[in-house]
Amino acid sequence: MDFLVLSDIHESWDHLDKMLEMAKQMDGVIFLGDLMMFREVNTESMDRFKEIVDASNWIVAVPGNGPLPVVVDFFSETGVSIHGLGQQLGDLGFFGVGGIPDTISLISQVRAFYRGGGKAEFNPDSPRLTWLNDFGIRYEKGGFVVDEWSEADYAQMERYRSPFEFPEAEIHELLLQAHKHVAKSPRQILLTHIPPYDEMLFAQAQSDIATGSKAIARFIGENHPDLVLSGHYHEHLSFDMDGVSCVVVPAVVDGYYCIMTYDDATSRFAVKSQRFE
Image (cartoon, rainbow, N blue to C red):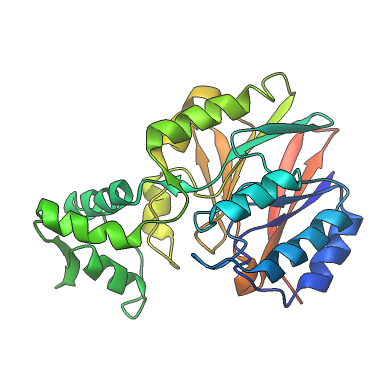
């Protein structure tokens, strides 16, 4: 079985014809969130996504961290949402959760990583350093310095809050709820917008400040799904967590997609990143 995996479209429809062509040819389509830009509702993007839904033989989706309620409702009304839900396709059980953890907690997580001596690969000219500076983290003399912050400093970070975020405890509950729908499936695929938290991933992600959800990581350790697919970071990354293969799917807005293949004979998954031609 072959699936087209899309993430982080962000209103970019230059490759719509190719997406529609592949959607018709493949067994299914998986969307990992962020249909639009951060806060604006773009009805054209909903119309274009509906074309993908109509062209698909089967499709599921989780919302990203930017959708206003109208987008979440749109996914539910079109019957593609598996946020806190699950759907079965043959031996494959797909379940998931959208959004991201609480932003203030994520910022605290970034600060704790660098305060603890964490090191990350980055280009000195990367926009990442601007984000780090905003979070009270400075790069000096080959190392990172984390400023001491007061409650007022953290309160200033409220401006970074996403329209669709949850406390980690609620993310875990949503995953438990979703998993019940596919608990008897021979093969279980977890779909999330934000990847699980992993220090290796944190250090290697280049296009943004990687954080990840500790609730998703906890769930993986407790339940061991067969595969985890995530988006949000706009780049292709693969890693194992407690013996579970986790793949971060690059962004459509940057010209990328993935193909997920499931071999019925061997019960193995393969996920390959490709660029739109």
